[in-house]
Image 1 (tube, rainbow, N blue to C red):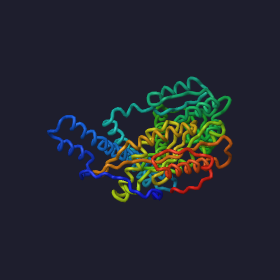
Image 2 (image 1 turned 45 degrees about the vertical axis):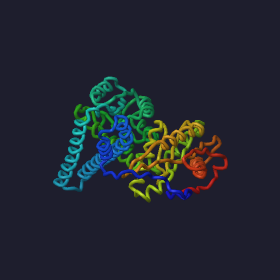
Image 3 (image 1 turned 30 degrees about the vertical axis):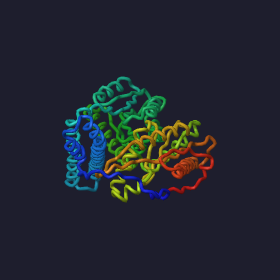
Image 4 (image 1 turned 135 degrees about the vertical axis):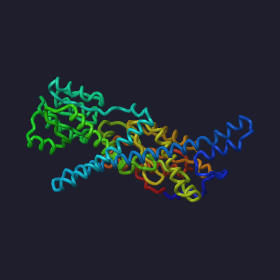
Amino acid sequence: MPDAIDDERDPIRTADDAPSDPLAPLVATLLASAGLPAADLARRVREVLPSAIAEIAESNRRLRETGHRREALVGAAAEALRDAADASELASDEAARLRRLADELDRSLRASSDADVTRRPSAHAGPRPRVLVADDEEDARSALAELLEPECEVTTAADGEEAVRLAHAEHPDLVLMDLFMPRLDGMQALERLRADAVTSDVPVIFVSARGDDSVKARALDLGAVDYLQKPFSGRELRARVERHLQLSQNQTALRELAQTDTLTGLANLRAFRARLEEEVKRARRYRTALTCIMADMDHLKPVNDELGHAAGDRAIAAVAGVIRGELRETDFGARYGGDEFVLLLPHTDSEEGRVLAERICARLRDAELEIAGRHVPIGASFGVASVEEEAGDGAGDALVRAADAALYRAKRAGRGRVAVATLDDVEGPRQHA
């Protein structure tokens, strides 16, 4: 955003010209320091090493992001080809060609995954998919669990009521559910799952001995992703479970991409708006604290003017990295726009929010970013506000306005500092953008 309040230019110290290779400054320092005392050599290396590490880390992050995006899109494309192949109006040879293309895409994903596992054996340490098996017959539950447990973490439920409760509490990656169960049958349980925002996107496969078309049609209409008729082979079960788990992962990846700011790795504005509404409702319902922090970078314009907007993007990403490092698992951080960020802190009052903002502010003051041989200091100003207990409709927008007004006061007071919202800030206009 335009840096309208401050007229002075931020100091950018000039160093020796350095090539674009992130390790070049380190190599140059070692060569130039040959023959110096060990203490001087160590001091010079410590000056250059952090920026080289930061360059490598940023390059790796972008490579991982590109790889994840590619995998999600390739998986989605394979599924779309299979859907097209299943269309009744296609000729058999054309349908077969589309299925072959889909298989080729799947093989390319598996080859990429196998190569990645070869390069990084620790990848197996990740969590296994979680599958909930719901069946009123104990033998059936045990048999399904035995088939799936080599690859999945399995939880079981003896009826539909228990299945709904466990799904809400544990949010499994997939539910395998019998059609006829006591207390709540499979259809009723599916309706409950789809009506609950927490479980509405969990894929459900029905497993039943009954296989007439009307039952299958109703199950699919209610939102089941598949219908497996008993008896079935273990191979067929595992294949269908694996397919729907992969589809779910692809959809999750695409959804995350749509809600993520690619430069910073934080959520984007659309995701923040949805989360803000959820957190405000939760805070009002349970009478818990909710704090919002607005952050705006200081002196970004001189970086853009002197080093270019690519350097400005590097500075924005560096600030986002510091912010991400301070967030708890329950906190939510987003890029609000340009060089502005917003944080939501559930179960946190304004004083606790101020402490967090002060810590981030101090870390930014101590951080330095080296770009094209120049040491670029980074920093930001912060505004903190909390939801009032008596807040009514529009509390979310009022919370953001109050944090924004406090941020403006921090800017006016000299930048690089934190201000907490007062009663006058609640209706204060946005002036610093």
